[in-house]
Structures are given as structure tokens and as C-alpha cells.
Length: 113
Length: 117
Image (cartoon, rainbow over all chains, first blue to last red):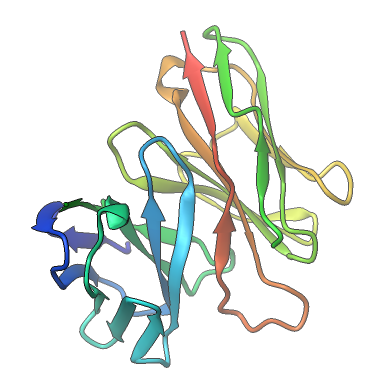
């Protein structure tokens, strides 16, 4: 059974700092990995999708990497801003008939002005 | 930009009552999903739906749950007899356009908060 773990559970940084969020998964039979942002009481906003054949994907100040064989992904946020404060979730799309997503618990990020 | 929509945003119901949560997926998507998130816990997969039938379901998705695509646009989740532990945020998602590969991005709706009293 796939298990997805995110470290740290919470992170507080001053504005402008670069930071790294970590995600690990136990079963490498995945199609892709997605990073999401969730604001309190809100839905999930997709940030980046990395295909299983890719190593890296970039969008603006965000850069996500994937090492499928070791079951790890990182989300790098450059020059953090208070508006980046949210919970960041990683999820892997399983190689199953229904292509379910399996989620981690999330990292709650606070960027202080 | 196309988006997944869900109604209602918040539903309060009494234990034992039936509820129907509604979703309008992105129009050219082929795969539809329901997930739920109990307060303070992980987002959990419930069911996936493709070509007018369930393609996968989790152990959570027991006989009290059902899904339907009654027309070309709506996708519904019915809970037949709600329990206190069904209180959660329910998310609809869609993905996979015609000509897609097996791997695709899933787009989530804003969620329906279900409160069972």
C-alpha cells in the first residue's frame, strides 16, 4: 500500500528566505507526482505536475524535483513571500485502473513579514 | 479558465439522512473523482469514475455511497444514511482529456463541507 510522507509538518520562515519542502513515497509505481497548495478551509490548487519520467519541473518561483527510484520529491520555493503562507500537499498518481491520487499529510508554511 | 465547480459549499444534515453532493467537472475531461478530508487529516481517495462506471474505489466507499453521472455535465456523490463520521470536506476532481496519456493532472473543486449532527 502506498504511503506518502511530508517533512516537516510545519515551517515558519522570514520573508525572502528560500526553502525546501520534502515528500517521500513508498511505492515507485506512479504515473506522476503533483504538488498542491491548500489555503485554510479551501480547495486544492495544483502547483506543479512532474511526470514519472521527468526529474524537474519549474513554475515561477517554484521548482519541484522527482527521484522516482528513491521515492522522493522536493518543492523549492525561492524568495518566499507572506502570500505563500498555506499548506503544501504532495500527491502521487498510482499506476492503478482508476489512477487515484495518494496524498501526504502536508507541510504548513508560514512566511513572516 | 475552465474549473471544477461544486454545490453546495456547505451542507448540514441529521444523522441517518440522505445527502447528494454535486459537481460539474471540466467539460472535456474523461476521469472523475471524489476525495474527502476529515478535519486535520489527510485527503483520502473515495472513488474514480470513467466511461460511465466506477473504475476504482477505496475501502471507505462502502454500500452507503454511490456515484452517478446523470447527464453530460454533472457528477454526483450520494450518501444514503449519513453518520457522524461522514462529516468532512468532500472534493470532486477531474482529469484526462481525449488523446491524453495515462498520466494527467487532476483538477479539484472548492469542496463541499458536510456536517452531520
